[in-house]
Length: 184
Image 1 (cartoon, helix red, strand yellow):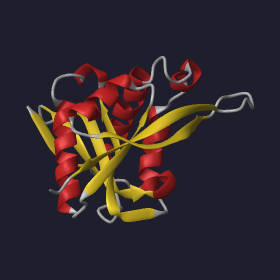
Image 2 (image 1 turned 180 degrees about the vertical axis):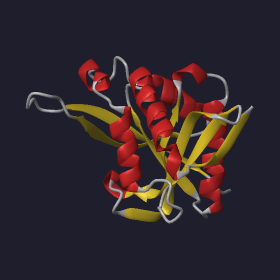
Image 3 (image 1 turned 90 degrees about the vertical axis):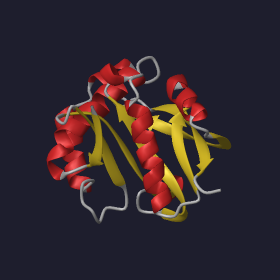
């Protein structure tokens, strides 16, 4: 049985594990293997703690999917739209789905759909009439998911710089912005 609940401070390690595994599986063949190989669950968990993602006063909400009342198998984060994807510059006129990651062992089992529905409900409850999500152009799986959910590209795009080791310039991956309505 799947339960959706709000992130708590002690969840940082489990959420980071899902995040890292989601990147490694979902971005394989899109991001350089060296980048995916150096992802560190402990470092990502500490970043969550440092950002205070479980703090109720945080501008973004993170919901977790818990399987059988114990194992965290996915998460989503949402809140006001980040102008230029900057967490310090928020546009309260629009909502944003910042993240939706599911452990690869739970892809296709309804976890992502349940998290997505909960995020939409959370955004609507905050009064956002529309919402946006950034997705890597090469991430066809995510693009199909969002299209099936009623979102579509709105013409905005940017590049996501992926840092490489050895002083090499970053790889720049194209991101597309998808948008959808929450209110009639």
